[in-house]
Image 1 (spheres, rainbow, N blue to C red):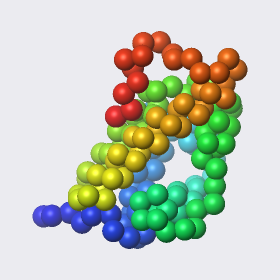
Image 2 (tube, rainbow, N blue to C red):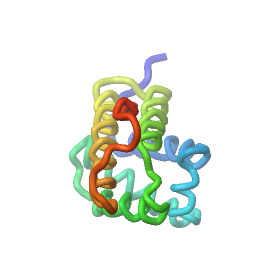
Image 3 (cartoon, helix red, strand yellow):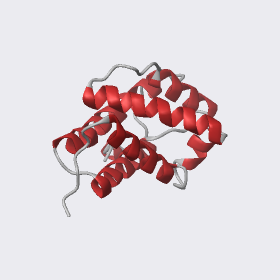
Image 4 (cartoon, helix red, strand yellow):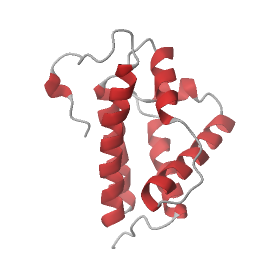
Length: 146
C-alpha cells in the first residue's frame, strides 16, 4: 500500500505525535525531554508548538512562536552541558524512522533533510554558548547527525 506524503497540518500532527511518543520512551533522549516537559499538560502544549514549528518549516504556514535555540541552550545548561552529537543522531534517526513508517514522497524527504540540517545547526548553537565556546568533543568523525 502506497503511503501518503506530508501534505497538510493534520499529517504533520500525526508525524509529530508518533515521533514524540518514541522520544518519550527512548533511553538516550527520554531523560532530557521528560525532565524538561514533566507533565501531560506540558507535553500537549509542547506538541502543539512543534506541530506549528513543522507546519511553518515544511509548508510555510505562519503560526509558530518560539525560540528553539534558547530552549535547547536551557536544556543543555540544565543538564550541565552534556548534550552530544549522539543525542542529535538519535533524534534524527527516530525522526527519519517515523517518517518512513508513515509517509513517502518529496515532502517526507524534505522533512528528513530539514531535520538533519536543523540538528547540525542547533548543536553548533548549543556548544557556541557553552563556557569555552565551540570545541569539538572527541573524534570529529562522530559528527554524523543521521
